[in-house]
Length: 472
Image (cartoon, rainbow, N blue to C red; front, side):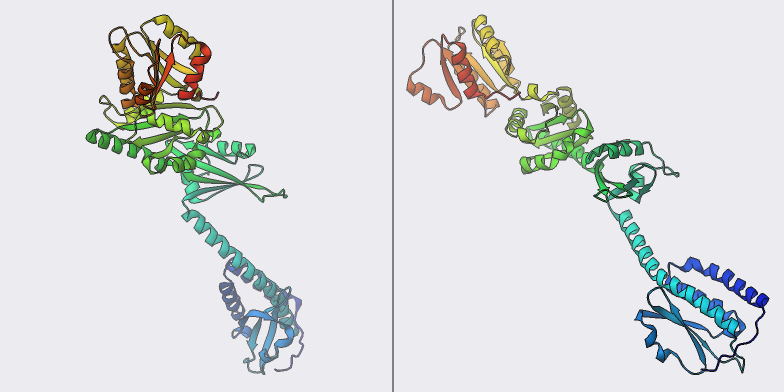
């Protein structure tokens, strides 16, 4: 390499050169996200100077120590290392093809200073490029997710949304939505999960805190799952199965549950409800606080008995439950849903068993009602015709009836009708004389016998064995 001979350089000329370099240098800084574009821009900047038109920048892919650069130095060229904070990132090479011109101290000072800055920038550029690329990939993946993602700073001032979240929350061009107030409110409550209704759409929201432990800056991340399609699927299933069951003349039942608030998390129990119900029906959301069970082939009373057997699926909070079934008067599935909603009552009232009392002597019915009314719904009549009509309603769990009625009717006849309508139907036959053991055994497992006169203890004992009371 030629000897570098110092020469006098005016301060004014050096300042003009430095000023020009800095102006051009600032123009290529926006390429920092692309290290190769940045290097290319720097090369073009150097080549604008008459003495540096052959300059080039060589980047090193791996870590290089200054002592290993010997092979980079060749005769008749200037090589300036681009040293970062911890390692050499590359070199600036300037061939000496200037026909006898010498590189002066000012040129060397300018290039060395520039090389020091460029080396550090190239090192930062690599990490910036990686970080920018990762952020770009993450942003793209977040937009492709079927989930809405909302990130909110702990002070509620910074919001970040992916594209699905913008659509779910109906954000305007300014990033505003009235539903953001609900998200902030749930963040403050640290709700964990909740359901959000936006116009006619339904979303399940899962709340996460980042970082998990207390740090200087905390963020709340809300994941939004669109349940609108699931709700629509429930409606379509109900409409389709209603027409199918009407055509095939088979039963269909719907059970409706509603919690007072979406925060009561009734919808979170849908997976366990689906598991328990199995393939015989479907369970899904109606809105942010309501669930529907739809079971083709099952009578309403059977679905009600199923719920009684699976009370562990119900939330602790007070809920309202109603049920309805397909009947000749119903034209479509929405009518079944509306009927179930209209019939909804508190959980304990819904789960209480309904017992029909039939005796020729009305005071006996009244006495039995006084004993049982706290734990059971009681209907009573002295007419076999009316009893037959009430049983045809299909929502009665059992019967307490005089075995030999005055109009010649037998209590066993009403018992058989009840068992035909409800396989779990139980009957208690009352009479002054108990039948023989053979007759009692022949009556079947759903028939019980109570001898008159009886006291309250005798009555409650046999009733609780036939129909266990629903816990308060």
